[in-house]
Image 1 (tube, chains in turn purple, yellow, orange, green):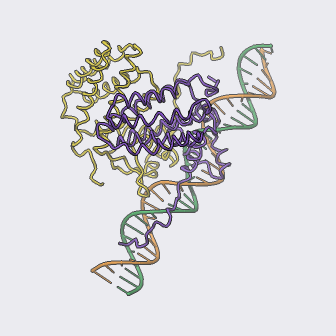
Image 2 (tube, chains in turn brown, cyan, blue, orange):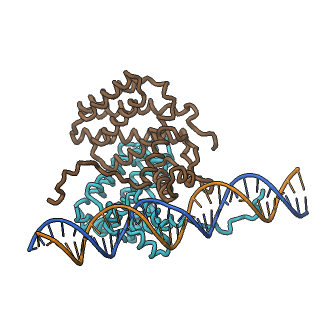
Image 3 (cartoon, each protein chain N blue to C red):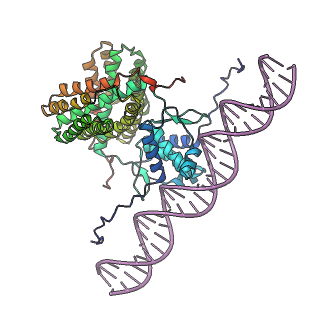
Length: 226
Length: 226
DNA sequence: GCTTTTTCAATTGTCGACAATCTACAAGCT
DNA sequence: AGCTTGTAGATTGTCGACAATTGAAAAAGC
């Protein structure tokens, strides 16, 4: 053995700039700090962050591939505006993914207990009326569900999809939903999985995502310009 | 009207270099000219193409997001090696996508006649033992199927997935399949769609993709290095 | 002979500058 | 006034050079 020291001193994190920039921008977008339509200009960001354009450019390209930024062709780039249609598509596709995951979980006899902590966290968050915490727990629940299906590509596509769903949730008026409702919806899913009731589990999830999706004619979620 | 001249003179195509490079590389990879494991070095490509590293770098990033190239961390980049697991995942996910598309097509009463030309093309290609033509027609058929479901995000994810499936098909030994078999499999799908028989259509497609997928323990498709 | 240290080559990461292209506004012509 | 033409500004596209990091070969020490 050459590496004598137990190198758990500290993981030196030296992420490339593009990653840091991408993370920053991504967080800003999906949290709704940067609203759809906000112009993204390489030089501005570069000056603002005191770095050159190259890493900024690459970061923007990453977010473009994630569907959070779009290029308008000789106009510039901007945070991608949302359309009712896109919201519909995102939620419907997500539903398919979760249904697929459920079938695999049951088929492969996966242990679903990793889902329970998130249910508990959701209940607690709802009790404290903590929207942020609830969203984190909700995402944790569903991402774990996908993980349990043991399908790496599915997980990566789901992650990408969920970024945009997260953005939608953040932009939506947070007040008009009962947090307890969301929290309560999840435990039955776990139970259905345990009972290996594919039909029930899928229909529970479908209801859940549908009720979340049908807010399409909502607030000023959508931009006016064509 | 300001644009007086009937400007059908010729559409001037001036794609950015990164696009041209990405297209070139993508084609080379999915056609099997560049095999999994082949190192991708920015400077080499730049010199070879007589351009600077910047656009090459961006092109590589595009292919990385498409899952065709991977970074090995301080070793370099390379054409992503295939694993049996990845093949399995790709085909299983594709099956879900097509099933979802079928359900939407039937639900929305879409006209499926755009699928027919591809069936004809496949039969013809099989008759001439033209593997290339058959693959093109096959891709056309399935992509059209997805298009008919009228779901833009689904289509873009499917496109991405199919790139890698195309790569797998190209790397596989082309000889050990009966082309006529593939060609014959598609018309019944169209018929089932016409009869709005969801179950039948999906099971036909599933059989079709499964028979294509279960070649996992095939040839030297997979690299040896861990 | 084996281990440790040093050096070197290869590769990616970052930078600042310049080129190209389009939009939008202003100026000029009829 | 209405149309065309020019011009300035903004933004992305491309370039060549340098910095940083790493793996592996070469050199040094025991």
